[in-house]
Image (cartoon, rainbow, N blue to C red; front, side):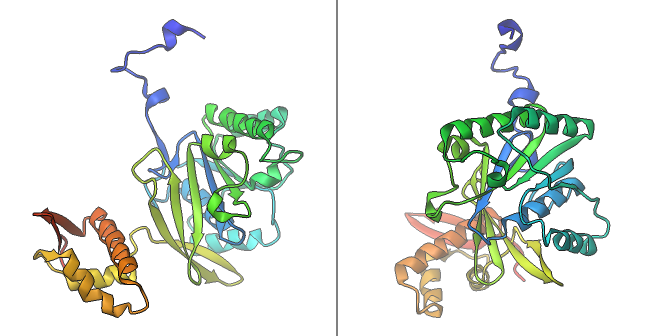
Length: 311
Protein backbone atom coordinates (compact mmCIF):
# COMPACT_ATOMS: atom_id res chain seq x y z
CA UNK A 1 0.00 0.00 0.00
CA UNK A 2 1.30 3.43 -0.97
CA UNK A 3 -0.32 6.43 0.68
CA UNK A 4 1.37 8.73 -1.83
CA UNK A 5 0.02 6.83 -4.84
CA UNK A 6 -3.45 6.15 -3.48
CA UNK A 7 -4.29 9.56 -2.01
CA UNK A 8 -6.02 11.90 -4.47
CA UNK A 9 -7.34 15.43 -4.62
CA UNK A 10 -11.13 15.67 -4.35
CA UNK A 11 -11.36 17.30 -7.81
CA UNK A 12 -9.26 14.60 -9.47
CA UNK A 13 -10.52 11.25 -8.21
CA UNK A 14 -9.90 8.26 -10.52
CA UNK A 15 -13.12 6.98 -12.13
CA UNK A 16 -12.21 3.33 -11.69
CA UNK A 17 -12.29 3.67 -7.89
CA UNK A 18 -14.82 6.39 -7.20
CA UNK A 19 -17.31 6.67 -10.09
CA UNK A 20 -20.55 4.70 -9.70
CA UNK A 21 -20.94 2.43 -12.72
CA UNK A 22 -23.88 0.15 -13.49
CA UNK A 23 -24.42 -3.36 -14.81
CA UNK A 24 -28.11 -2.43 -15.09
CA UNK A 25 -28.60 1.32 -14.79
CA UNK A 26 -29.62 2.41 -11.28
CA UNK A 27 -30.63 -1.16 -10.37
CA UNK A 28 -27.58 -3.46 -10.37
CA UNK A 29 -24.21 -1.77 -9.65
CA UNK A 30 -21.16 -2.88 -11.64
CA UNK A 31 -18.49 -4.96 -9.85
CA UNK A 32 -20.50 -4.88 -6.62
CA UNK A 33 -22.95 -7.26 -4.95
CA UNK A 34 -26.73 -7.10 -5.22
CA UNK A 35 -29.05 -9.19 -3.06
CA UNK A 36 -32.34 -10.31 -4.62
CA UNK A 37 -34.62 -11.68 -1.92
CA UNK A 38 -38.21 -12.66 -1.27
CA UNK A 39 -40.47 -15.09 0.48
CA UNK A 40 -40.81 -18.63 -0.81
CA UNK A 41 -42.61 -18.94 -4.18
CA UNK A 42 -42.28 -15.24 -5.03
CA UNK A 43 -40.57 -15.84 -8.41
CA UNK A 44 -37.10 -14.78 -7.22
CA UNK A 45 -35.28 -17.51 -9.19
CA UNK A 46 -37.32 -16.70 -12.30
CA UNK A 47 -36.29 -13.06 -11.99
CA UNK A 48 -32.64 -13.93 -11.30
CA UNK A 49 -32.51 -16.08 -14.43
CA UNK A 50 -34.18 -13.38 -16.51
CA UNK A 51 -31.76 -10.74 -15.21
CA UNK A 52 -28.89 -13.06 -16.12
CA UNK A 53 -30.23 -13.33 -19.66
CA UNK A 54 -30.54 -9.52 -19.79
CA UNK A 55 -26.88 -9.09 -18.85
CA UNK A 56 -25.65 -11.82 -21.21
CA UNK A 57 -27.49 -10.22 -24.13
CA UNK A 58 -27.42 -6.53 -23.25
CA UNK A 59 -31.21 -6.27 -23.01
CA UNK A 60 -32.48 -2.94 -21.65
CA UNK A 61 -35.75 -4.30 -20.21
CA UNK A 62 -35.46 -2.47 -16.87
CA UNK A 63 -32.59 -0.10 -17.60
CA UNK A 64 -29.56 0.33 -19.81
CA UNK A 65 -27.57 -2.88 -19.43
CA UNK A 66 -23.85 -3.49 -19.79
CA UNK A 67 -23.22 -6.87 -21.38
CA UNK A 68 -21.14 -9.50 -19.63
CA UNK A 69 -20.67 -13.24 -19.76
CA UNK A 70 -22.91 -14.79 -17.08
CA UNK A 71 -22.36 -17.79 -14.81
CA UNK A 72 -25.47 -19.04 -12.99
CA UNK A 73 -24.80 -21.20 -9.92
CA UNK A 74 -28.00 -23.24 -9.71
CA UNK A 75 -27.54 -24.65 -6.21
CA UNK A 76 -31.15 -25.70 -5.53
CA UNK A 77 -34.29 -26.82 -7.38
CA UNK A 78 -32.38 -28.02 -10.42
CA UNK A 79 -35.35 -30.19 -11.45
CA UNK A 80 -37.51 -28.03 -13.71
CA UNK A 81 -34.76 -25.48 -14.35
CA UNK A 82 -34.25 -26.79 -17.88
CA UNK A 83 -37.86 -25.96 -18.79
CA UNK A 84 -37.34 -22.37 -17.61
CA UNK A 85 -34.20 -21.92 -19.68
CA UNK A 86 -35.71 -23.55 -22.77
CA UNK A 87 -38.78 -21.32 -22.53
CA UNK A 88 -36.57 -18.20 -22.57
CA UNK A 89 -34.64 -19.43 -25.61
CA UNK A 90 -37.82 -20.41 -27.46
CA UNK A 91 -39.32 -16.98 -26.78
CA UNK A 92 -36.02 -15.26 -27.68
CA UNK A 93 -34.24 -17.42 -30.29
CA UNK A 94 -31.48 -14.83 -30.85
CA UNK A 95 -30.39 -14.87 -27.20
CA UNK A 96 -26.86 -16.00 -26.37
CA UNK A 97 -26.88 -18.77 -23.73
CA UNK A 98 -25.52 -18.25 -20.23
CA UNK A 99 -23.25 -20.67 -18.35
CA UNK A 100 -24.94 -22.83 -15.69
CA UNK A 101 -23.30 -24.93 -12.98
CA UNK A 102 -24.95 -26.93 -10.18
CA UNK A 103 -21.88 -28.22 -8.30
CA UNK A 104 -21.72 -27.73 -4.55
CA UNK A 105 -20.28 -24.29 -3.80
CA UNK A 106 -19.03 -23.37 -0.33
CA UNK A 107 -18.85 -19.58 -0.25
CA UNK A 108 -17.16 -19.61 3.17
CA UNK A 109 -14.20 -21.64 1.87
CA UNK A 110 -11.67 -19.10 0.61
CA UNK A 111 -9.87 -21.71 -1.53
CA UNK A 112 -13.13 -22.62 -3.27
CA UNK A 113 -13.92 -18.95 -3.83
CA UNK A 114 -10.46 -18.40 -5.35
CA UNK A 115 -11.01 -21.39 -7.65
CA UNK A 116 -14.28 -19.88 -8.91
CA UNK A 117 -12.70 -16.46 -9.36
CA UNK A 118 -9.87 -17.99 -11.41
CA UNK A 119 -12.44 -19.81 -13.54
CA UNK A 120 -14.33 -16.55 -14.10
CA UNK A 121 -11.16 -14.66 -15.08
CA UNK A 122 -10.06 -17.48 -17.40
CA UNK A 123 -13.46 -17.53 -19.15
CA UNK A 124 -14.00 -13.75 -19.07
CA UNK A 125 -17.08 -14.09 -16.85
CA UNK A 126 -18.18 -10.75 -15.41
CA UNK A 127 -21.52 -11.59 -13.77
CA UNK A 128 -22.19 -14.44 -11.32
CA UNK A 129 -25.61 -15.40 -9.95
CA UNK A 130 -25.67 -17.43 -6.72
CA UNK A 131 -29.04 -19.17 -6.30
CA UNK A 132 -29.43 -19.39 -3.35
CA UNK A 133 -27.22 -18.10 -0.55
CA UNK A 134 -28.51 -20.69 1.92
CA UNK A 135 -27.28 -23.50 -0.36
CA UNK A 136 -23.88 -21.83 -0.70
CA UNK A 137 -23.51 -22.05 3.09
CA UNK A 138 -22.43 -25.68 3.28
CA UNK A 139 -21.53 -25.58 6.98
CA UNK A 140 -22.57 -22.11 8.09
CA UNK A 141 -25.60 -20.10 9.16
CA UNK A 142 -26.21 -16.62 7.75
CA UNK A 143 -27.32 -15.35 11.17
CA UNK A 144 -23.87 -16.09 12.60
CA UNK A 145 -21.69 -12.91 12.45
CA UNK A 146 -18.53 -14.89 11.65
CA UNK A 147 -20.23 -16.70 8.78
CA UNK A 148 -21.68 -13.41 7.55
CA UNK A 149 -18.20 -11.85 7.51
CA UNK A 150 -16.85 -14.80 5.51
CA UNK A 151 -19.67 -14.36 2.97
CA UNK A 152 -19.10 -10.61 2.77
CA UNK A 153 -15.37 -11.19 2.23
CA UNK A 154 -16.14 -13.64 -0.57
CA UNK A 155 -18.35 -11.07 -2.28
CA UNK A 156 -15.61 -8.44 -1.89
CA UNK A 157 -13.08 -10.84 -3.42
CA UNK A 158 -15.29 -11.44 -6.47
CA UNK A 159 -15.99 -7.72 -6.83
CA UNK A 160 -12.34 -6.71 -6.57
CA UNK A 161 -11.68 -9.01 -9.53
CA UNK A 162 -14.28 -7.15 -11.62
CA UNK A 163 -17.04 -9.69 -11.15
CA UNK A 164 -20.55 -8.47 -10.35
CA UNK A 165 -22.54 -10.70 -7.99
CA UNK A 166 -26.31 -11.23 -7.83
CA UNK A 167 -27.15 -13.39 -4.82
CA UNK A 168 -30.62 -14.86 -4.34
CA UNK A 169 -31.79 -15.02 -0.74
CA UNK A 170 -34.86 -15.57 1.47
CA UNK A 171 -36.76 -13.50 3.99
CA UNK A 172 -37.04 -14.67 7.56
CA UNK A 173 -40.28 -15.90 9.13
CA UNK A 174 -41.34 -12.27 9.49
CA UNK A 175 -41.36 -10.87 5.93
CA UNK A 176 -41.46 -7.28 7.17
CA UNK A 177 -38.11 -7.79 8.94
CA UNK A 178 -36.35 -8.02 5.58
CA UNK A 179 -33.74 -10.44 4.32
CA UNK A 180 -32.77 -13.31 6.61
CA UNK A 181 -29.52 -13.28 8.52
CA UNK A 182 -26.96 -11.02 10.12
CA UNK A 183 -27.02 -7.29 9.43
CA UNK A 184 -23.40 -7.68 8.31
CA UNK A 185 -24.82 -9.44 5.27
CA UNK A 186 -28.01 -7.56 4.59
CA UNK A 187 -26.83 -4.00 5.23
CA UNK A 188 -23.21 -4.10 4.02
CA UNK A 189 -24.28 -5.15 0.52
CA UNK A 190 -24.31 -2.32 -2.04
CA UNK A 191 -27.75 -3.03 -3.51
CA UNK A 192 -30.84 -4.85 -2.27
CA UNK A 193 -33.87 -5.86 -4.35
CA UNK A 194 -37.06 -7.33 -2.89
CA UNK A 195 -39.61 -9.26 -4.93
CA UNK A 196 -43.22 -8.51 -3.99
CA UNK A 197 -45.88 -10.89 -5.25
CA UNK A 198 -49.18 -9.27 -6.26
CA UNK A 199 -52.54 -10.56 -7.46
CA UNK A 200 -52.50 -13.59 -9.72
CA UNK A 201 -49.25 -13.65 -11.65
CA UNK A 202 -48.39 -10.00 -11.06
CA UNK A 203 -45.44 -8.76 -9.05
CA UNK A 204 -43.10 -5.86 -8.40
CA UNK A 205 -39.34 -5.65 -8.03
CA UNK A 206 -38.76 -3.19 -5.19
CA UNK A 207 -35.40 -1.40 -5.30
CA UNK A 208 -34.99 -1.38 -1.55
CA UNK A 209 -31.40 -0.13 -1.44
CA UNK A 210 -29.52 1.62 -4.23
CA UNK A 211 -26.84 4.27 -4.67
CA UNK A 212 -29.26 6.14 -6.94
CA UNK A 213 -32.56 7.99 -6.93
CA UNK A 214 -34.32 4.68 -7.72
CA UNK A 215 -34.16 3.64 -4.05
CA UNK A 216 -37.70 3.02 -2.81
CA UNK A 217 -39.15 2.69 -6.30
CA UNK A 218 -40.40 -0.51 -7.92
CA UNK A 219 -40.62 -2.09 -11.35
CA UNK A 220 -43.80 -4.06 -12.24
CA UNK A 221 -43.66 -7.44 -13.92
CA UNK A 222 -46.03 -10.22 -14.94
CA UNK A 223 -45.42 -13.95 -15.00
CA UNK A 224 -46.65 -15.38 -18.30
CA UNK A 225 -47.52 -19.08 -18.69
CA UNK A 226 -45.35 -20.78 -21.30
CA UNK A 227 -46.08 -24.49 -21.75
CA UNK A 228 -45.02 -26.12 -18.45
CA UNK A 229 -43.33 -23.11 -16.89
CA UNK A 230 -43.43 -19.31 -16.57
CA UNK A 231 -41.68 -16.40 -18.23
CA UNK A 232 -41.02 -12.92 -16.81
CA UNK A 233 -42.58 -10.02 -18.68
CA UNK A 234 -41.26 -6.63 -17.53
CA UNK A 235 -43.21 -3.42 -17.76
CA UNK A 236 -41.29 -0.68 -15.96
CA UNK A 237 -43.64 2.01 -17.29
CA UNK A 238 -46.86 0.14 -16.62
CA UNK A 239 -49.81 2.35 -15.69
CA UNK A 240 -52.19 0.99 -13.03
CA UNK A 241 -56.00 1.06 -13.49
CA UNK A 242 -56.19 4.08 -11.15
CA UNK A 243 -53.39 5.76 -13.09
CA UNK A 244 -55.34 5.28 -16.31
CA UNK A 245 -58.45 6.81 -14.71
CA UNK A 246 -56.39 9.78 -13.54
CA UNK A 247 -55.04 10.35 -17.05
CA UNK A 248 -58.54 10.06 -18.56
CA UNK A 249 -59.87 12.66 -16.10
CA UNK A 250 -57.41 15.49 -16.72
CA UNK A 251 -56.13 17.45 -19.71
CA UNK A 252 -53.62 20.24 -20.24
CA UNK A 253 -55.63 22.67 -18.10
CA UNK A 254 -54.88 22.94 -14.39
CA UNK A 255 -57.16 20.90 -12.15
CA UNK A 256 -57.17 20.90 -8.35
CA UNK A 257 -55.84 17.61 -7.01
CA UNK A 258 -58.56 17.72 -4.33
CA UNK A 259 -61.22 17.94 -7.07
CA UNK A 260 -59.64 15.00 -8.90
CA UNK A 261 -59.77 12.89 -5.72
CA UNK A 262 -63.43 13.82 -5.14
CA UNK A 263 -64.22 12.91 -8.74
CA UNK A 264 -62.62 9.47 -8.63
CA UNK A 265 -63.34 8.30 -5.07
CA UNK A 266 -66.97 7.22 -5.77
CA UNK A 267 -65.54 4.60 -8.16
CA UNK A 268 -63.79 3.00 -5.18
CA UNK A 269 -66.59 2.74 -2.56
CA UNK A 270 -64.80 0.06 -0.53
CA UNK A 271 -61.75 2.24 0.08
CA UNK A 272 -61.62 4.73 2.96
CA UNK A 273 -61.35 8.32 1.80
CA UNK A 274 -58.00 8.96 3.48
CA UNK A 275 -56.47 5.75 2.07
CA UNK A 276 -57.78 6.60 -1.38
CA UNK A 277 -56.29 10.09 -1.25
CA UNK A 278 -52.87 8.67 -0.36
CA UNK A 279 -53.17 6.15 -3.21
CA UNK A 280 -53.94 8.97 -5.66
CA UNK A 281 -50.93 10.94 -4.37
CA UNK A 282 -48.67 7.95 -5.06
CA UNK A 283 -50.03 7.59 -8.59
CA UNK A 284 -49.62 11.30 -9.25
CA UNK A 285 -45.99 11.21 -8.09
CA UNK A 286 -45.32 8.19 -10.30
CA UNK A 287 -46.92 9.78 -13.39
CA UNK A 288 -45.11 13.03 -12.67
CA UNK A 289 -41.82 11.13 -12.52
CA UNK A 290 -42.62 9.66 -15.93
CA UNK A 291 -43.21 13.23 -17.18
CA UNK A 292 -46.76 12.39 -18.24
CA UNK A 293 -48.24 15.06 -15.99
CA UNK A 294 -47.12 18.05 -13.94
CA UNK A 295 -47.93 19.01 -10.36
CA UNK A 296 -48.20 22.76 -9.77
CA UNK A 297 -48.49 24.52 -6.40
CA UNK A 298 -50.22 27.92 -6.33
CA UNK A 299 -51.21 29.69 -3.10
CA UNK A 300 -50.90 26.46 -1.08
CA UNK A 301 -53.23 24.65 -3.51
CA UNK A 302 -51.86 21.75 -5.60
CA UNK A 303 -53.00 21.46 -9.21
CA UNK A 304 -52.31 18.85 -11.86
CA UNK A 305 -52.25 18.90 -15.64
CA UNK A 306 -51.06 16.64 -18.42
CA UNK A 307 -47.81 17.38 -20.18
CA UNK A 308 -47.98 14.60 -22.79
CA UNK A 309 -50.19 14.35 -25.88
CA UNK A 310 -53.48 13.03 -24.55
CA UNK A 311 -54.89 10.28 -26.73
